[in-house]
Structure formats: C-alpha cells, structure tokens
Image (cartoon, rainbow, N blue to C red):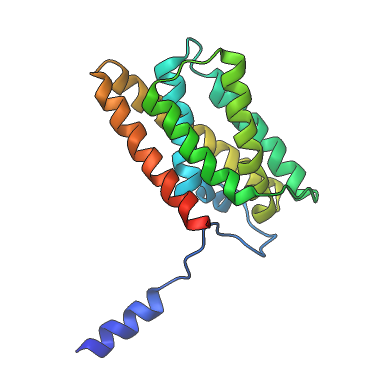
Length: 186
C-alpha cells in the first residue's frame, strides 16, 4: 500500500526553489503575477511594507508606491543585464528590517521611509527581473506587488485600532521569518 502513495507523492513533488522561473524567458503575465506569491521572502516583505505604512505614516500609499516603482525599475534593469551584488542577502535583510520596523512601530519621515523601502525594492526587482525576463511577466509582478501592499495596508489598518501588541505580534512573526531566511543564507 505504501508504494502507490510514494509513487504518487514522487510524481506530484516539484523542486523547492527560493525563486521560481530560473532559465525561462517566456513567462507571461499570469506567471509574473504569481511570482511574488511563490516566495516567502517577497511575500512577507511586500505585506510588511503595506502594514508598516498603514500603521505609521500619514500618507499610507507613499512607501508602497515607492516600493512598486523602484521594484519595476530594478526588474527592468535586471532584464537588461544589470547584476546587483548580494541580492539574496539583501532580500532576506529586507524581511528582517521591515519586520523590525513593524514590530517596533517606528515612525520615520515619509521621505526616509520611501528611501528605505525603495532601497530594498531595487533588490527585489533585480531578483524578479532576472528570473521573469518578459515585459508581460514584469507587469504581472508589479500588479501582484500592489495587491500584496494593499493586503498589508488592510491588515495594518485592522491592527492599528487594536492594542499595540497585535501589531508587535505580526511584526515579530515577520522578524522571525526574516531571521530564518537570513540564517539560511549563512
């Protein structure tokens, strides 16, 4: 009885990769849209940007818009051959730092917050752009990023009106994931 289950699991298994899409230049819009949801690092960073912005900024869309714009720029630069050093460590660090900002409820001047998320977005964009390759896939990825920021903002607005420990708890979870991602690279 174990053999059929083992064979079934073996057939259903797919290789685990931190970032999908390696070696494929023909990915389309749907694959690009799905891409940010396929990696915990990108998913958490994008949610954290929205959450942090909603709970600490007056103009809650400024940092997410900056992130999406610089993400797009980084992706386009990467599709045209730009290679940034330490992309994976910077992405892991982004999850850790953004989680800390959420957890500690850090309020930064809006321009500084935009620079922080923009710096991280460049590396996220470079990672996505080097993997996705096509304009349609990059467009899907940017739209998914905006969707994840919107979900983060919704979560942020929901926890903002509650006791501070809700936000700190969500931030601590993101920090733990970021620490795990960072340790995984060492």
